[in-house]
Length: 369
Ligand code: IPM
Ligand code: MG
Image (cartoon, rainbow, N blue to C red; front, side):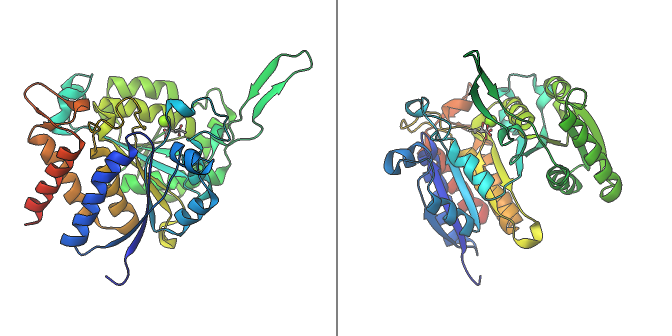
């Protein structure tokens, strides 16, 4: 391989550093055993950066992220930083990276591993074999819209304002990502908004409809209001292939979808920007948060972070075989009955973070033998 791929690793807070530690072992394994090498740099974000540098993310860290071929992110936040203002909160690290790197398409798969069917709170016959992908717009909408703020009115009362705003180009580029993905899956896209009450939702629907007619006639497109989508996700989640939706609805629906699978500790995500042809910017992170309640105990599930690294291999470098190998190893250790506490089930063997990492590495050795 001509030059090494440059990764920026940002473990963050809480369980972030612990689960990232296990991924670093997988990266080392890839270096030794596969034809792909990485130059890995690490930096502080979130609460860790607030403590060390007085800000959740420095400009230097953003610049390093811009310069990297891909960013692997852990998780940020914790109760000790909950009282800080919006300009100081740990969450600003991920929001800044999304905005500055132009990462507008957040891919959040919800996959039910066969070994974990019973971990779902829904009936096995409803979730067995579930494999859906939510494409959440992630640099626009009400998260970033202006005007925003809290203002004091003449009578002394206060008013909080946020603005949902979408321009056609923002809708089109994220819809394109969804249509392209669908072509590699079941060729079905469901576009989700509230066109019945919001103008931005109506424009969203019109724009996606026109784009499909123009460029993706081979992909089946349906539309759904966000509230109905929440209901349908619980009623019959397997009706969906790819869902494309706004920033806020995607935030809500992806949390809902992730719980169909039984554990947040299992789910990766990718956030992509730019065009594929231009070598797109990308950040990969587990869907779970920093889980401060279990941080430092060695019990966190490292699989979502590992599966995020697998997505990185697939979407940033086109290393499908290597991505599939890691996914297979993760599925197999679950199949062998190893479980961190978050997915523990009767008859299984309870293990901690490091032992789970050991098992994945052992399985990788076997699969690659
Ligand atoms: C997510 C999180 C973030 C979001 C927070 C941490 C800002 O909930 O990635 O879903 O709301 O986008
Ligand atoms: Mg969220």
